Image (tube, rainbow, N blue to C red; front, side):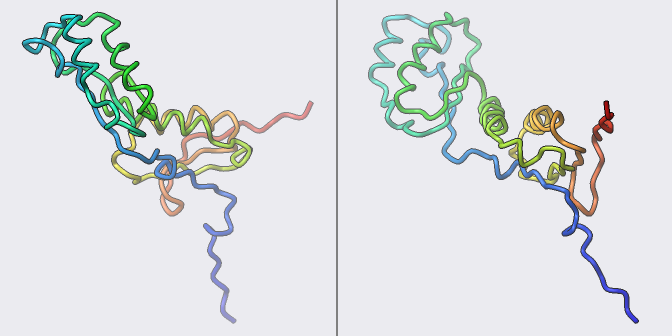
Length: 173
């Protein structure tokens, strides 16, 4: 008599959390304030304001924007704020920093919107070998969000996982 083969992974209560699913859709762009600086390093308020008024901001409609300055210039704090006021009616997201900073923020927002009830007191597998564009910080943010409610956390794939953490058994009072 043959022993039937069971798929243990399919019968496992393990829930896989894939950050690729949380990746925010849409175009990303970096806006460099340096493009409006004289000689690449000087901000003159009058000409800066005039250049911002002439810029075609509608091109950023529904985009996720990273705002920064590639020049080694000392800018007044209001400079990026002024650019943001022009972007705000069009852009979906505006983050001060690099495209990587933007990606971190987008993942952070998506992680905070997760319905935690799905994961409560369950063993969770954080899928590894995902899209290389997912910043490592997104995995750390996911751990912070899930650890307080999970039964256990693993990283990788069901066939080859690394245990990360296991909740201590709850004591009966």
